[in-house]
Image (cartoon, rainbow, N blue to C red):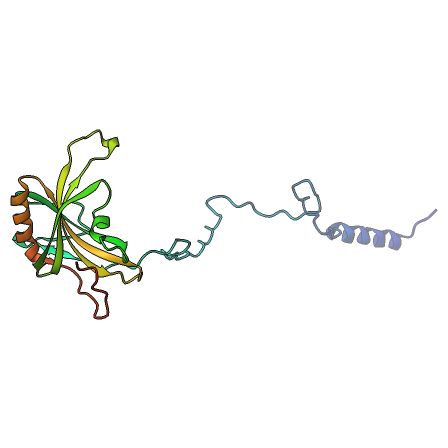
Amino acid sequence: MHTHPLSVLLALLLALAFLGHPAPSGPATPAPPSGDDPGSVTQATETDETRPAPEAAPMELVSAAKGAPPTAVTHEEATLALPGGQVLTAADSEPYRGRQVNLRLETVGVRADLKEWWSSAVGNHAEIAAREQVDLPAGQSTLALVRRTPPAASGLTEPTFEYWLMVPRPDPARQDMKAVYSLVAQVNGETQAAKQELLELAQGWRVPDEPDNGDSSGRS
């Protein structure tokens, strides 16, 4: 069959045009996500360095009384002014060491209806060998010589002697109780010399004043 030259030329031109313009490719297929589920979306894994620090929980301010049993009202504090400007209080863990006595301060609670309240104030294993009333700057005070027997568990047998100066006051926390402010002297030498030293040092003893409406029946 005879082919027309014009047809051949047209076919060549079409072939050249096709070779110069390649067919556009389709959209790239994304790589399948990692993991067991091919349809899931992969997220970047945080490390200890890249993970933000957790926000600290707000601190709860706990009251000292929260969940705790109620405590008695704190008594006013007695003080003892000593030579050299030292002041002794009931909070001091070490006694004052004098020539014949070691001194400490105590505040003891006793029942208000006790007639012989001083016997309860000096505690257990104690016998009052002598008792008298003395006038001091702190007020009228009960002075007792106490013979204390060591408890059996201590293994000791020799008794010790103490002088107790005591001033009772109404307990501000409980009407059925008294607060007995006490200046306690452990005797280290002769008892009469210890008594004299105690009374001299007691000139600097101060106890809280008795309320105007307080019960003064404890002074006996």
